Length: 417
Length: 215
Image (cartoon, rainbow over all chains, first blue to last red):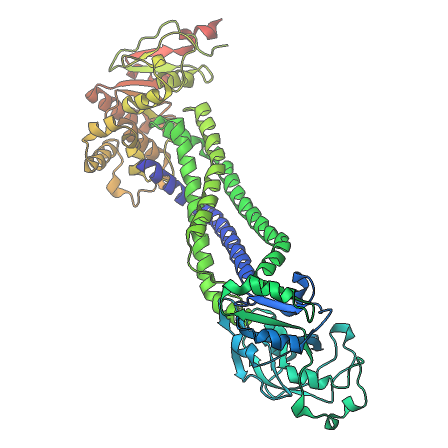
């Protein structure tokens, strides 16, 4: 046994040039596959934790996925708003610990404007129960103050005290601008890796104020004259949706049923966790593509290992004949080739892990800072060990082929050189 | 169609036998048979008192390394092992040969050095032990040392001197003869060099022996 490993090792070392290249190709492919897997997981986690700690999302009567899309992901539009009065009623319920009202519909240069209140700042959570954090400035408390997400600040190059004008509607429908009532940026949020980064936050009252006189969808005469408005007495009349946190998870289904059966207005309460899972599954093709690509990369590098071994078999006929003359059986030759291939595989895969985790520690702070995406998910555990074993087992399996070829050759050649 | 058809061939123990014949006459096949690499399709073959046809392949592999030392024409060495490791190879695969040397790792090295010096290769004068750096003559000496190490009872040599120049040739053979006589080792050598005939106890012309070639 010892002589087998000795021979295999020295044989590899004598071909160190090609051996290093082969190992390197395995290393790269394993690191790539691990990287893809990690990216997949962190994207999944980041997606499923776009909001966290929210027990119910309530909007006007509709399907779960559209409600989730416009309230949490800020994609698409709500067909109906819900009355402010209904919101007040439900937020006063004893089982409700907190609520965050959301008012959507306006935009600024393609970024959504979200009307909310300071509860957003207090209760909004994403990721693993992470709070929103300000990079500079403070959260709004005045009427014409805005807090912008990190992507908005980066892409539009906005600093504190920047004046911005909000457009009525979103996308190509945003024809009219509320240019008479500009907002001032008072805070810039840190990256979260969630749609918050692409949102401009203002107060509910501000949303109401800029729409006074806009009931027909365009400015009336009084709307263009703020002096005509009594800004201190502005009360929102409606909002788009609200997020609900409960005192106890046990009330979730009960409260959901009650909201869905609310008599004064047709409302829908959805479970954000379940709905996000559903949505992620609809995007399953993305995950599968990533994994298939990774597996193909591994396959190609292992194939190159096998072809390398097969290519050298012919020049190794003499070596095999000598070994047979000093007592090695054809099986010993078989094991020799197998151990060689296995050693190359092992070193390659091991280095792949080292590279991947080493590189991850290096890039983690950068990605965390720029994208808000948490890539480092902990040191290799059972799952990674299993992963390692699978690739290793596969490598050993296909290495049987050159080993078997060598066995046939040495059986056929005998001592003939 | 068999390559060899030999009615009877008897080689006495501790003798020196030369097998002659042109290339293609089946010399290497005969050596492969004696080494238990090939088996006769019919008949009996007894080597050192053992009928190899009754052994399975694993047993024949073990028998080979325990009792037979090989010496080929050239390219005898494994290039990724240094010359001492090359010499010690049979002892790595055979417990018997390991024990014959002295059953201690330190003895192996000493015996390898002794054989090398005896065969005219002074290891202390080599700048390194790398196999690639050796000349053809030096490589043959290393291969001979490997064949002799651990006292195998039979040495099979296939044109061991053909790569050497004539002066070295006979000196090299004499040394192998002397070592074989001392250890009572049987030597069977294949060659088409007729000038060597006089140094052997027995000379066999394979063309005469082989009935297959005649008909």
